Length: 318
Image 1 (cartoon, one colour):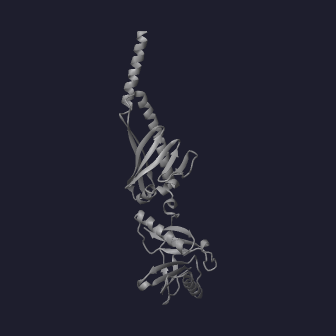
Image 2 (cartoon, helix red, strand yellow; image 1 turned 30 degrees about the horizontal axis):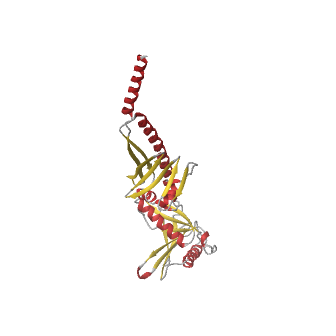
């Protein structure tokens, strides 16, 4: 009998010692991920409480939900509650409630490259001296980490789509049209749709009179000048170069790389998309090789409903 109790005592001793050896006095939990997005773009999404519901619920599963309150936003995942308590410089403090525990965690941004950003989310707790409570704390911490990992998966999926950050879908393309005929005109006011199509019609007539045919959609660029004037440049892709004159000239476009977005809507929508594209360029430290231009996909003179206008913005890049 004494031997039996001795074996139990030895087993308990080994269990206790093992608990202290394998579970440290301070349990540190860290969840991290690399986001395929710029640092600035990632920061705008994480450092704005209003955007959290978008990425938190991205690719929504039954286990995710959002419950807004008056001054803050609570989120839940697999029974845990997440509360954004404070936004800092490139960091956010998040309180996690797991069972009866209230865990103070911190999510920080780590710059890695121009097109990738690390996100590290961590917290620490003191381990109990009671070996059974110590094991329970460790198991709870593992569950919390799994939830943190899942949250970062949703954030990563969300950030990998440009439209979620900039509100526009951006692709990298090249142009097939390299020979164009160009005309420029100085106007006293912001060019209107009528001004643009007057120039395009002249290009079409000039091309026709020189026995060449358009090979693609017309493009235009508006450049502000001094004294509140504007220079309107319009170009038309053609099958072969034609003899220029004082009003019309040939240009050759290099088959380079362009960042492109398609826009449905009028000038206000186009201007907003242009601002978003510029923000994209700033975030990724991209430099344009030449002037950007707008391609007219739909004919605005026939389609009078501006909400149905289709245009494409082209920004040349290295």
